[in-house]
Length: 154
Length: 133
Image 1 (cartoon, each protein chain N blue to C red):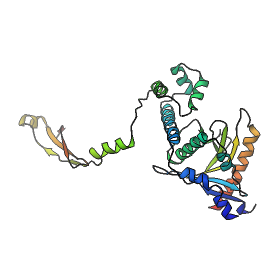
Image 2: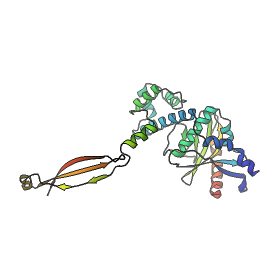
Image 3: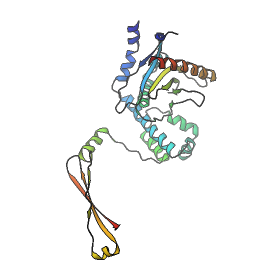
Image 4: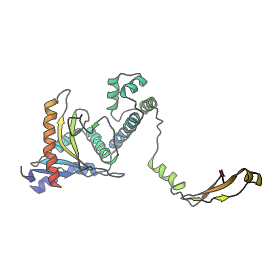
């Protein structure tokens, strides 16, 4: 009996553990899209009635739209994003990884304050010019430096 | 009611990121309303529900028109609502989502009494879950 119970829903458990199919990933993108839209609407206090007005549609058609199948068109997605004020774009995990590898996976910033009086006149007015150097050591070991200046009273 | 009549089985998911919740479903007297309901869904609905459950477990404050984390103020459970179907769940001990009931939904087919009964069922399963841990 216990063994039967254990195996009874094994097919469903396996279904949940399996790699997502094309259709499941399509649903994933739709759900991500609406999660972003709804989160932004909540943050900016945009109601569904507001969204309906902006899209020139009825409140009921907005509700229907949120229940759409993965066949929601890219054009429609952009229209919705525009209406709430979001700029959406397509990206890929692999491209992100490549970009991170190339650039700033790890940043170390070293502050090197060097106090240098500009000239005696400024010293007399009571200000010191400070120079700061920031060094960024990127993941590919290249070093980028930035120079900053700051006036401080002394 | 003896303890072995209600079993909470874990539904393991393949999560890309951090897993925030553990997912369980209720098996009572060897049957699970939730899993039997799920099994009878058409393939596209299964795909949709699978992704919704994975998102519930892995995305912080996941928002969807198809999920109500809590039904109004008077009920202490939520529902996952793909068109024409309802999967009822509750949250317990901060990081567990327990699916305990399934119903087919036609327009206005589930009245107040249904939701009231579901609330008492939820309380019973909640007690059982507490004891099982």
